[in-house]
Image (cartoon, rainbow, N blue to C red):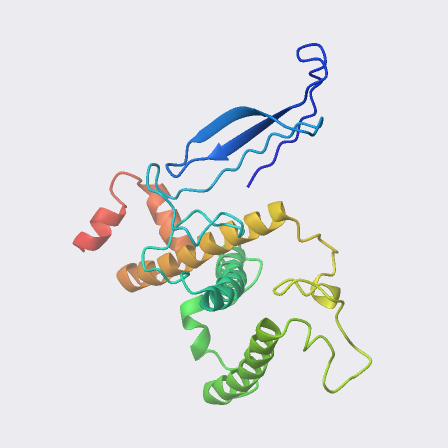
Length: 248
């Protein structure tokens, strides 16, 4: 939603009278303006832009453009229930953040290994490497820790602010903030969760989720990592393409 407020002087046009200029968004997505007499001498022009993921296709009524990244895309009607929508908003936000970390964790080690700066296995071979514990032990530990975190996140969605204090170390707590943006120790650079920042984060999160899906498909088809596939394509762009890959 974009809002533009103007305060033009109309004394030279209509003495002793006030005019209110209003803008409405029609059901088709167009902008309709009108001038109406009113009692206020302050004139306000509000331009409401409702996102459309496909030009000409009306957005669902329950998606009004107020959420970051809301372009009216919901072909399955998942956001129709307001209570479910609260959960889906947080689920997409968290999965997007994990996807951004995952994509960076795949690309950066692969690039640095190719450059000879480090020597680590490819991401799809990482599970075969030896660690301080077996893979099954690490899986159980991660499952328990993630389960604990997600339960507390679910409690915060149901009752915002209810889990801001550490249950063990009582002296540690988070400042009251919007759900999904805890601040405090989770925001060391003190970035403000502005609407612009939220839009950028959700857009990059969605892109990262698609990128990770692409990494999986690429590896299953070619047996190589994303950076290897990129280098192979750049070596012969006309013959090393997705078409040739699917042709075998």
